[in-house]
Image (cartoon, rainbow, N blue to C red):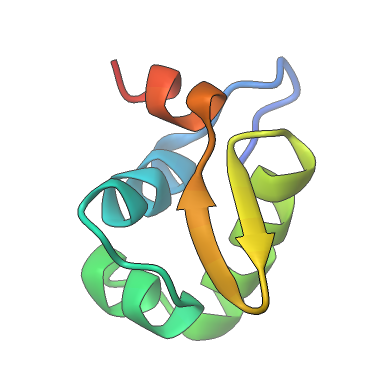
Length: 73
């Protein structure tokens, strides 16, 4: 189950990860717990969301980009 649909928009699982990041979670482990998803799935999803421009990553810490914040509006 991808986190970014073919049209480039976050899927429901992707939105769940974006919401967790908006609430202040920054690690893949914290996002997995908040989104109630397996860690392997979250790691893959965060990679997809980063490649699509919704999330940025620095030293294993994730945050929303402006695009990611806009997707939650």
